[in-house]
Length: 163
Image 1 (cartoon, helix red, strand yellow):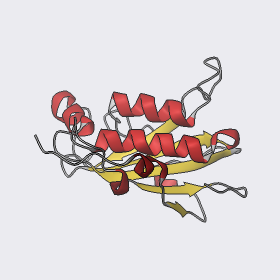
Image 2 (cartoon, one colour):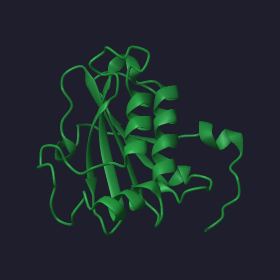
Image 3 (spheres, one colour):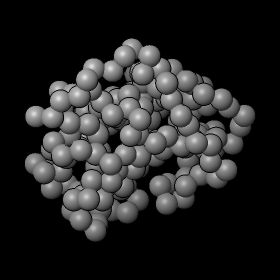
Image 4 (cartoon, one colour):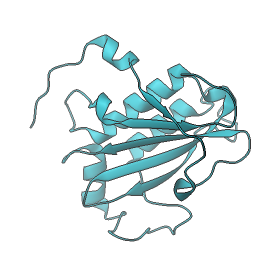
């Protein structure tokens, strides 16, 4: 297995975010009152996403198994951790308990892009950091330090915001 040195604790608190002028329509436009938070990475061989694809065949090359409106599958661990981080996890009866998402996976080329629909109240630095860290874990080889800098973060929100 590959090995990487452990990351210093402050690495998990640093983030670089690109501001989008319009939502990325190819990744599903968010409804009114929601921001579009996009994570993208080139995932490693034997990462959670790689194993998910290799074992399930749910992301066949060139087509969406569930249809174009739903997109590809994000590995379930990443889906649940990132979705809860960007959702209203403290209220399990809320319709946004987990942030809804749309994923494009270029399997077997290992390029992954996921857009999450995030309510205004949930667009905070802490939530985006937690989500980015969880997404990086899904893109990185298991049992190694996550490739935090390898995850590109872009946000579109129709209101003033800062991260």
